[in-house]
Length: 192
Image (cartoon, rainbow, N blue to C red):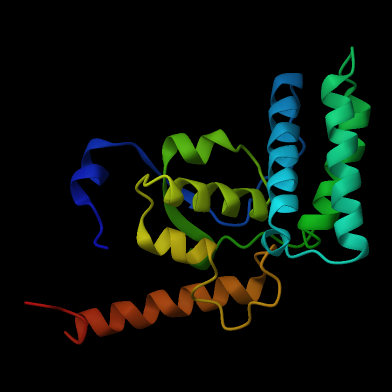
């Protein structure tokens, strides 16, 4: 699979943070609802294929509880922002336990993504972004190879936690980029 430069020139692209830098809670009710709908969809899809969500035991039970509470909030007559805030915090605690850590602004936490996909999932946590990238790839939507590889943790040396993008994943991703650049400029990776 080669990078499609014609699509890069003709479409809008963003440099995307793999692990969101803005894990702030969405403020408008519409954005809160959209955020919760993404969570429900992700957890429901994960239930169909338990290997996808990477959670076991009590974590899996908590994910199902979040899904059920999210559905109840979405179908309630009035959408309550305080109930959303509680759910938001539970999701962050389960899927992004290092959310309060200093955000990684290095190139190891960046990738290229089409702007419509990037903006569609707002400040989603890593597993929701990952599931969206996999879904796009399955539907034959162009996802740059290295972007797909980053979300599949292809460059990570330890993949025991597929649902989190940790600082070690970022460092491994950055190291892989540096190694490829060195090979390229030393003409080891160039086909003439």
